[in-house]
Length: 150
Image 1 (cartoon, one colour):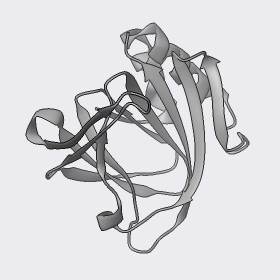
Image 2 (tube, rainbow, N blue to C red):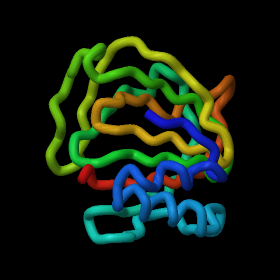
Image 3 (spheres, rainbow, N blue to C red):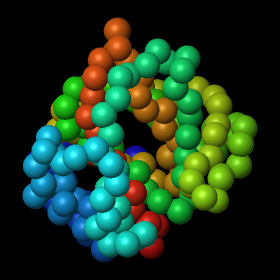
Image 4 (cartoon, rainbow, N blue to C red):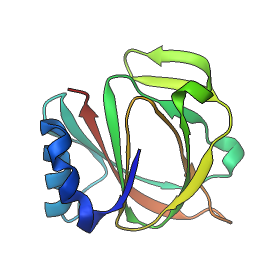
Protein backbone atom coordinates (compact mmCIF):
# COMPACT_ATOMS: atom_id res chain seq x y z
CA UNK A 1 0.00 0.00 0.00
CA UNK A 2 1.07 3.55 -0.71
CA UNK A 3 -0.45 6.54 1.07
CA UNK A 4 0.64 9.85 -0.42
CA UNK A 5 -0.45 13.37 -1.24
CA UNK A 6 -1.52 14.06 -4.81
CA UNK A 7 1.33 16.54 -5.34
CA UNK A 8 3.95 13.82 -4.63
CA UNK A 9 2.65 11.07 -6.92
CA UNK A 10 5.15 11.52 -9.73
CA UNK A 11 7.78 9.41 -7.94
CA UNK A 12 5.54 6.30 -8.28
CA UNK A 13 5.04 6.55 -12.07
CA UNK A 14 7.99 4.21 -12.66
CA UNK A 15 6.24 1.25 -11.02
CA UNK A 16 4.19 0.33 -14.10
CA UNK A 17 2.98 1.85 -17.39
CA UNK A 18 -0.66 1.46 -16.36
CA UNK A 19 -0.03 3.15 -13.02
CA UNK A 20 1.83 5.94 -14.81
CA UNK A 21 -1.30 6.64 -16.89
CA UNK A 22 -3.51 6.68 -13.80
CA UNK A 23 -1.23 9.03 -11.87
CA UNK A 24 -0.81 11.35 -14.83
CA UNK A 25 -4.60 11.58 -15.05
CA UNK A 26 -4.91 12.45 -11.36
CA UNK A 27 -2.29 15.17 -11.66
CA UNK A 28 -3.90 16.79 -14.70
CA UNK A 29 -7.66 16.44 -14.14
CA UNK A 30 -9.98 18.83 -12.33
CA UNK A 31 -11.14 16.20 -9.84
CA UNK A 32 -14.06 18.25 -8.53
CA UNK A 33 -15.43 18.81 -12.05
CA UNK A 34 -15.41 15.16 -13.20
CA UNK A 35 -18.93 13.79 -13.36
CA UNK A 36 -19.95 10.76 -11.33
CA UNK A 37 -19.68 7.51 -13.28
CA UNK A 38 -17.13 5.42 -15.19
CA UNK A 39 -14.62 6.94 -17.61
CA UNK A 40 -12.20 4.75 -19.64
CA UNK A 41 -8.57 5.82 -19.92
CA UNK A 42 -7.19 2.73 -21.65
CA UNK A 43 -10.05 0.31 -22.22
CA UNK A 44 -10.25 -2.30 -19.48
CA UNK A 45 -6.60 -1.76 -18.47
CA UNK A 46 -7.15 1.59 -16.77
CA UNK A 47 -10.50 3.20 -15.99
CA UNK A 48 -11.80 5.88 -13.68
CA UNK A 49 -14.83 5.51 -11.42
CA UNK A 50 -16.03 8.75 -9.82
CA UNK A 51 -18.29 8.34 -6.79
CA UNK A 52 -20.16 10.61 -4.41
CA UNK A 53 -21.58 9.00 -1.29
CA UNK A 54 -22.13 9.39 2.43
CA UNK A 55 -19.59 7.74 4.70
CA UNK A 56 -21.05 5.04 6.95
CA UNK A 57 -20.54 3.53 10.39
CA UNK A 58 -17.66 1.05 10.49
CA UNK A 59 -20.02 -1.91 10.97
CA UNK A 60 -21.57 -1.21 7.56
CA UNK A 61 -18.22 -1.19 5.74
CA UNK A 62 -16.57 -4.45 4.74
CA UNK A 63 -13.02 -5.55 4.01
CA UNK A 64 -12.21 -6.12 0.34
CA UNK A 65 -9.34 -7.01 -1.97
CA UNK A 66 -8.91 -7.41 -5.72
CA UNK A 67 -6.90 -9.83 -7.87
CA UNK A 68 -6.82 -8.21 -11.34
CA UNK A 69 -6.65 -4.51 -10.49
CA UNK A 70 -4.86 -2.06 -8.26
CA UNK A 71 -7.13 0.44 -6.55
CA UNK A 72 -5.91 4.02 -6.77
CA UNK A 73 -8.25 5.94 -4.45
CA UNK A 74 -8.06 9.74 -4.46
CA UNK A 75 -10.22 11.86 -2.15
CA UNK A 76 -11.42 14.82 -4.19
CA UNK A 77 -13.71 16.28 -1.50
CA UNK A 78 -14.23 15.34 2.12
CA UNK A 79 -12.52 12.80 4.34
CA UNK A 80 -13.12 9.18 5.28
CA UNK A 81 -11.48 6.55 7.46
CA UNK A 82 -9.97 3.57 5.64
CA UNK A 83 -8.77 0.26 7.04
CA UNK A 84 -5.72 -1.63 5.78
CA UNK A 85 -4.43 -5.15 6.43
CA UNK A 86 -2.10 -7.53 4.58
CA UNK A 87 -3.97 -10.32 2.78
CA UNK A 88 -2.10 -13.12 4.57
CA UNK A 89 -3.46 -11.94 7.95
CA UNK A 90 -7.11 -11.95 6.89
CA UNK A 91 -9.75 -14.67 6.56
CA UNK A 92 -11.38 -14.90 3.13
CA UNK A 93 -15.17 -15.08 3.49
CA UNK A 94 -16.02 -14.90 -0.23
CA UNK A 95 -13.55 -15.72 -3.00
CA UNK A 96 -12.94 -13.20 -5.74
CA UNK A 97 -15.99 -12.57 -7.90
CA UNK A 98 -14.50 -12.73 -11.42
CA UNK A 99 -16.99 -10.24 -12.87
CA UNK A 100 -16.42 -7.55 -10.24
CA UNK A 101 -12.88 -8.52 -9.14
CA UNK A 102 -14.02 -8.32 -5.54
CA UNK A 103 -13.03 -10.59 -2.65
CA UNK A 104 -14.65 -10.29 0.80
CA UNK A 105 -12.61 -10.79 3.98
CA UNK A 106 -12.70 -10.38 7.72
CA UNK A 107 -10.11 -9.71 10.37
CA UNK A 108 -8.31 -6.83 12.03
CA UNK A 109 -6.28 -4.04 10.52
CA UNK A 110 -5.01 -0.54 11.04
CA UNK A 111 -6.88 2.64 10.12
CA UNK A 112 -5.98 5.99 8.60
CA UNK A 113 -7.89 9.05 7.43
CA UNK A 114 -7.93 9.63 3.67
CA UNK A 115 -8.09 13.41 3.45
CA UNK A 116 -8.66 15.71 0.50
CA UNK A 117 -5.91 15.49 -2.11
CA UNK A 118 -4.56 12.27 -0.63
CA UNK A 119 -4.19 9.05 -2.59
CA UNK A 120 -4.13 5.46 -1.35
CA UNK A 121 -2.87 2.77 -3.73
CA UNK A 122 -3.80 -0.82 -2.91
CA UNK A 123 -2.18 -3.83 -4.60
CA UNK A 124 -3.87 -7.27 -4.72
CA UNK A 125 -2.22 -8.23 -1.42
CA UNK A 126 -3.55 -5.07 0.27
CA UNK A 127 -6.91 -5.61 1.93
CA UNK A 128 -8.82 -2.39 2.49
CA UNK A 129 -12.01 -1.17 4.15
CA UNK A 130 -13.09 2.21 2.70
CA UNK A 131 -16.09 4.51 3.23
CA UNK A 132 -15.94 4.69 7.04
CA UNK A 133 -17.38 7.78 8.73
CA UNK A 134 -15.16 9.81 11.02
CA UNK A 135 -17.61 10.66 13.78
CA UNK A 136 -20.84 11.38 11.91
CA UNK A 137 -21.63 10.58 8.29
CA UNK A 138 -20.32 13.05 5.71
CA UNK A 139 -20.67 13.48 1.94
CA UNK A 140 -17.47 12.72 0.00
CA UNK A 141 -16.36 12.65 -3.60
CA UNK A 142 -13.78 10.02 -4.46
CA UNK A 143 -11.97 9.34 -7.72
CA UNK A 144 -11.14 5.63 -7.95
CA UNK A 145 -8.90 4.43 -10.73
CA UNK A 146 -8.79 0.70 -11.45
CA UNK A 147 -5.38 -0.21 -12.85
CA UNK A 148 -4.81 -3.64 -14.37
CA UNK A 149 -1.93 -5.49 -12.75
CA UNK A 150 0.75 -5.81 -15.41
